[in-house]
Image (cartoon, rainbow, N blue to C red; front, side, top):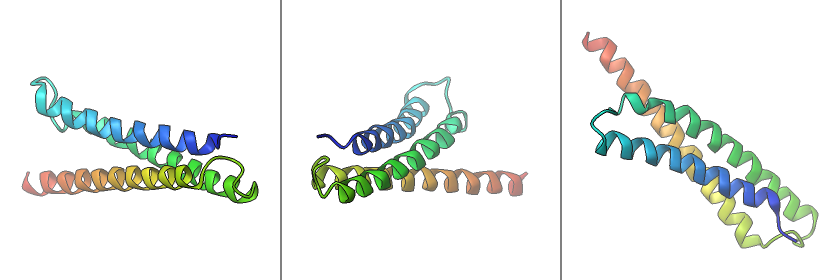
Length: 108
């Protein structure tokens, strides 16, 4: 039996990381997109990161409740790790944008 919450945690964590990576790639390699224009990816990544963490917690709880019969313990751990990394990167990106906004306001 597969732990579907762990699968969804991995999927949403990868979507969060893809949103941040895609925005960085677009701002780097496309002249039409600047880093400031790619700011919409940060809240998207933040939402996906939070959802991934919730799915990761649910996967851990389901794994414990079923005494390990729903999915492997390693997959649940990987799902929770990816969810945590995705959320931390999204929060870091949000803080970087906040600092950038403050610096722009101060310098004007």
